[in-house]
Length: 85
Image (tube, rainbow, N blue to C red; front, side, top):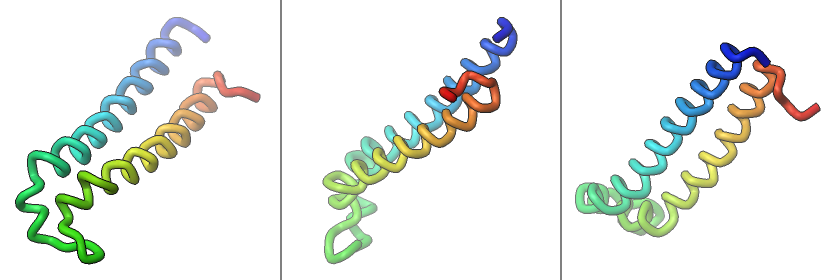
């Protein structure tokens, strides 16, 4: 892989990581701690939404983010021909 392609590859990789980490931070810290009071006005399955995010929602979102990262990185690897064949 050429130096230019390598730089583009890592730039896209870091951009993806930044976006996913921001989503993770927003859901776990933002929804679970900072915005818990406004979210508690909404109920999900009988539980307050702020409580749900703090206890379960952040974990579910984190698992989804893992699969999104896996999928996007496989696509990026194929695009730059660095995938495992």
